[in-house]
Amino acid sequence: MGLLARAKDLINTAISKTPLTEIDFRLLLTNNKAIFARASGDLYEALRLQTEAGHLASQSKDAHLLGNHFHGLGVTNEMIYEREGSEIYFDRALLAYTEACHYYEVSACTREYASTLNCIAYLFVRAERVEDALDYSVRAFDEARIVRDEGLIAECLLTRAQAFLLRKWYDTALTFASEARRIFQAKGFGLLRDDAHKTIEKILGAMREEDCAAQDSNSPALHGVRT
Image 1 (cartoon, helix red, strand yellow):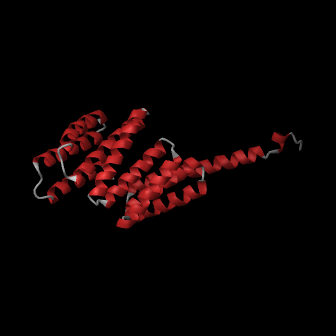
Image 2 (cartoon, rainbow, N blue to C red):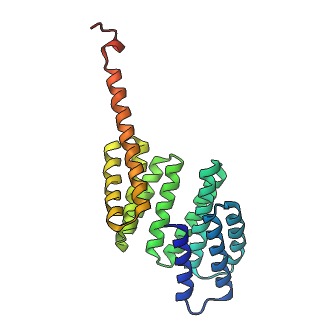
Image 3 (spheres, rainbow, N blue to C red):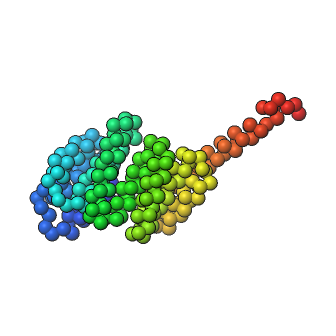
């Protein structure tokens, strides 16, 4: 989900709740500010705002809002991890996503729960921890099927494809990525379709490299055979 779309979802959450406590309103507002800071590329400002929101979160009893808070914290730390490669941000992202899963499960927010499981799976893809990535992507896929969210199902399929690409199971990766692209195309999700297409190109490129390596290893010259 895009950053602005997530902000809209959080605002809609506030509108649908009557009434919001002062603490919950301030938590929602601060988290929204963090989302917009992330969207503008100011990750450390987003992190500062989410740290501020953390003090409010400790006083909130709204499990859904708490899930949103920790999910957003996970996203920010993951983005810093991607940019800087520091393991501390990986650990913080994983911890925040895990907390978000807890609160989404408690509040029966199955879609958000599935989405966050997929975030964890993709975080493991970034870290090249293939088995963990596959485990979480399967769990996310199963939850996404419960809510019949085709877009989210496709996101889970794409994450699985990326994990299988790391494992070098190229045919399996291509199957999942192609199905994800088909769904994104049908739903009109252009950016996600493009992400799936890029993954397919990576898979096909890896398959070509593997074929070339196999041909080279079987060449007569390599085995000292004169032609």
